[in-house]
Length: 177
Image (cartoon, rainbow, N blue to C red):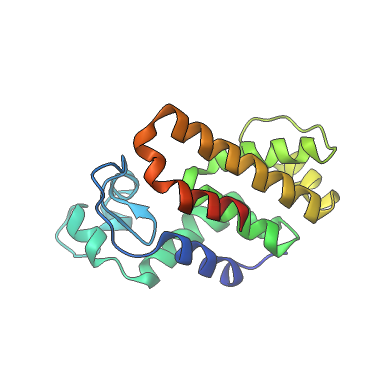
């Protein structure tokens, strides 16, 4: 079993604090949680300033504890990252999911399993077959393949939309760390 408490510092380090970059399609972001994502969750989850709606003021008002609660309940627990036995691998999948979306991160993990010798279906679902493959393979092999898959994914994003080149250094650091 892997632990959220050991994984969340990596996510928070990579995501940083409040940013409102006009080139970020998610809008204003704090601790990696974007306004677009928070709006989808609704006021029950994201109305941090208590005014009945979810807007940029809620992104600014979000505390690190608020962000950690969202990450634990809507990411770590929801997708079962704690069922990945190797802590480094669980942390990497969680970190990538926060950045690129869970289904995409899970597809990359499945491709990494295939590269490491387990032919799993690449469907973006982190179910029992994928988890079984992940936990059966040497974690170092899956982690190396996952890092390569993530770097390739980021490079394709940049090739398709050169405006994203400004995030290349951070994305590749994230992929390979």
